[in-house]
Image (tube, rainbow, N blue to C red; front, side, top):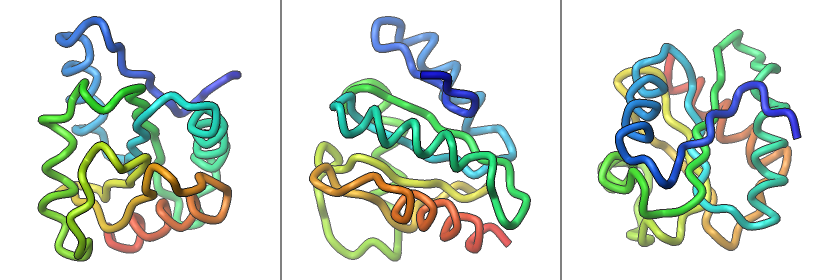
Length: 134
């Protein structure tokens, strides 16, 4: 599977993982974060990558794929904890995907672990983050 807009975060090299995280975090783009490595997640990453080239608002889109919930948890979980529009306290480990706005980075919605990462839901995450970045 050719992923043009997706950066896979290494699980066995924390220094490299943090370096890639920082590069993506600092980049002027809408950043989708995908957590996990199930068959459904792999398909969802491919769909998110396909959608990354189609921003109606002309935003640059990127995907950070972290194949487990342990690596970078200290960096990623705070986005969900501090999200003012997310009103429940779903544990980080129960989240499959969320999208971050342009700087200052914030998350506005997400897909739960048992949720579907289909075209409509993923595009909704992108467009919502884009609308909050205007």
